[in-house]
Image (cartoon, rainbow, N blue to C red; front, side, top):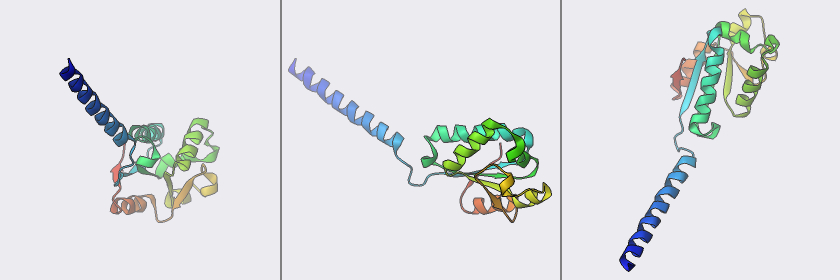
Length: 148
């Protein structure tokens, strides 16, 4: 009977240590967290890409565990005009900005749409040399490229 108690105690202790180490690993911030840039130019994919970014954040346990940038150019930028009136998109973009996600609007597209940063939802910065240039810069800095 005594041997069984010792065995049971040992197995319980090992299980507890293993469970604690797994729980700790799940909450630790990775030393080399991934850097990801999402490329968005299609107006009909705005909701899809914004949903992908939210799923990405949720999947890794939040913005502390990944660095994300969104580069928008072409027709898709129209969805981010402050006058577009999409309350859900405004809320999500605002949260992305608070989470530290870089929201870059193509300077060339802004010129062609005759808008400035003040015409966009809060949180956007201008990619003055162009969206594709910003994408290349981020990729050269080790960002993984995603174009959903």
